Image 1 (cartoon, rainbow, N blue to C red):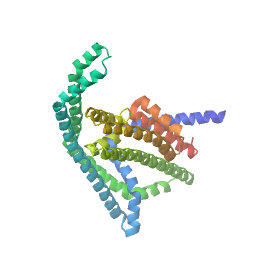
Image 2: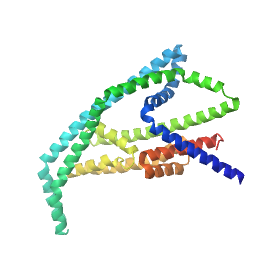
Image 3: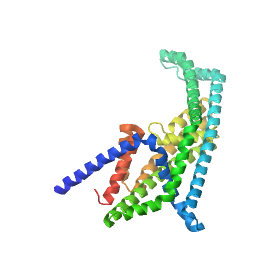
Image 4: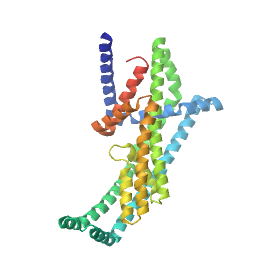
Length: 350
């Protein structure tokens, strides 16, 4: 009985400490973002830097400089390519949707008339209400599309307007990444040499377990996002959907966010092609949407649970409770709560 109460006390202390650390971390992230990113980048660059040192007999500082420079050059190129393409496709999409609706409004009205002949048994008041509101619906759809694309462009413009701040963040992150990468191994050894041997072993176990789980968790979700992006891009190329790159990126991002999901792209596209009487593409998009969603639901619990060493039900429970309680932030809170609890159980602290 005493062991049980002791376990409850340890679990309660762990939960309170975790809650405090989580709150402090996210409440101060605006001020610590460059250094958090730098630490993550340094951990990513640790092995490439060691490889350069051993392969080319370089000094630690030179190898760290090369790996940091190449890493940031790749990231900047990807961001530049993505932003320019998304901006161009967003502007073109907004123009085309608005012009299509204005040029084909008569076709949409005739489609409504044909639809009415198929459903003459409907209540006349319902048909009248639909006819009275149809023009407003068309206007709303046009305005909504322009609004969404306008917001995307506005976000990109705001990003460009905040370039001085972005440059400052990038500069601080770059410098901090270089210094973290250069000193990460030495600092770790210096820190561990000051501790008793039993503490060193326990801290090493905690560090290795934490790194293993967090890296696997990150790679798991990158795989899921990448899989959704590739599947969507292939589907859109097969059906020759315009703006395939931009829409695939939006699908991949929406897939990871609560509530949104890939249906925010697939379903409107299917409706648009159905109204355009391109029934094959419309049905194909709906079937593809179902297949991608099913694959996502099958793959996510298995990949995430296997990478974290957790039971799939525990992962599903953390995802559902977190999303239901506080959206994306709640999901992150619950997932990492389960992860760190599992880590401390493995190293016999809890």
